[in-house]
Image 1 (cartoon, rainbow, N blue to C red):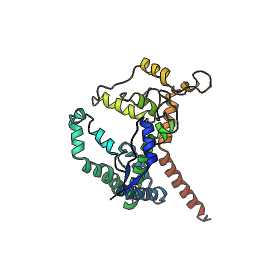
Image 2 (image 1 turned 180 degrees about the horizontal axis):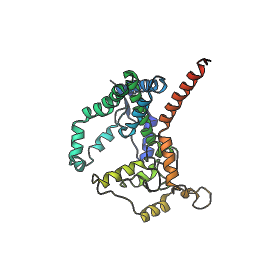
Image 3 (image 1 turned 180 degrees about the vertical axis):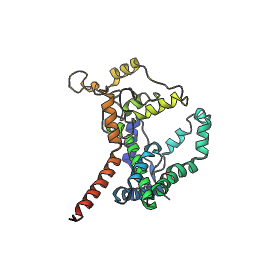
Image 4 (image 1 turned 120 degrees about the horizontal axis):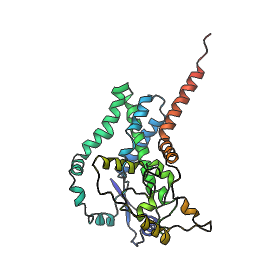
Length: 299
């Protein structure tokens, strides 16, 4: 179930972002995905505002959260050029990995089990949560994860700093980095896409839990050949194409890119990344307080 619509402004935007010219094409809306997203958001909002949710369910749905968020929920068909260019990408090294082949072969069963069945069944059988609320809370967790991920392709291309290349759209956005556990250092990622950390400073100097997870896997022997960028290469690129200081004291803007306190940055990141969990618990405690204050005092 699809529909073709013309959006010339999209083609202009994509052409400017990728420094190329392309003819106006038909954007094909996949209405199946549109309706799916509407249903997901309706259920997730119910899970957010429900006052019947048990404390264990709130904690559980967020404990098994964010690692499963993906950017695959497209609501329009891919541009023909994207499909054509995608077929030219050599993925032989990826398909050589037996774990990747296993995940690809059993993708649907794994999704149903780890994304749907386990997160919903644990609250139901663990502490007798209402099945509908358990489902709604799981969908709410999933939708929030999607939105956090999508911020990389939206907010991180509009707001922030371009320390490494002022001529491209992607930017360094700390809020996005906090909400995505370290994926908001987007200007650096586009300038140096081969750096496994997708950031200049990794996790040992600033909030970047994604890089910390990769390094932990490397410690167990699950990851190897982690590529990085030499400091001299980074500084040379900043000198040539980095964002100018716009009349401010020399080096003022570039000072913003350097981390100040790992402990403080990590604390802020964990709080902001868990905003929805904190918000839900706050609503729950507020409702309990209001209900208790309405009870008559028995002398």
